[in-house]
Image 1 (cartoon, rainbow, N blue to C red):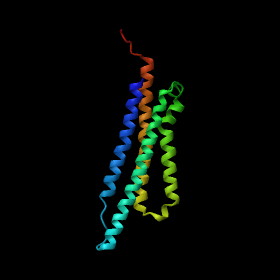
Image 2 (cartoon, rainbow, N blue to C red):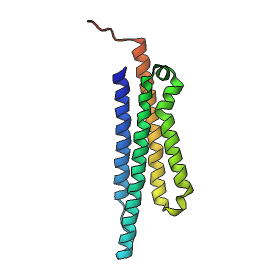
Image 3 (spheres, helix red, strand yellow):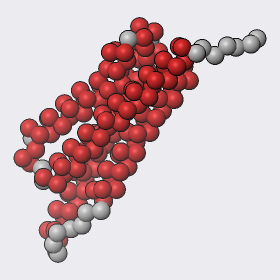
Image 4 (cartoon, one colour):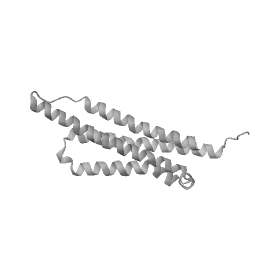
Length: 151
């Protein structure tokens, strides 16, 4: 059981990191919208702002991935509701709070930054929900057909 939980925790961590890298690639593909020193300074400030948002996103994804380890507790692992919360509840809550706080202050930021952030923030809980469904399927199979060990 430990291998199964650790496998899904590592997959969750990798999913968060892949989304972080994809977000970085997405924001780096933008270009300056003008010529001159002022356009270059604004472009650099936009890149720094986007990298700051992406680091906050990565930190939230890493924190959320640690909740998968709550499945080591037998009561949580046996309850499909609490197991679902350990996979998808924390990402929905933390990323939702993160996006809500940015939306309240969002008038300071460009619409392009917020749209990209929304897309990547919604992808992570979707991925964790898919991971939860796969975990429950493998967990049910491991309970129904336990592996017999020969000493």
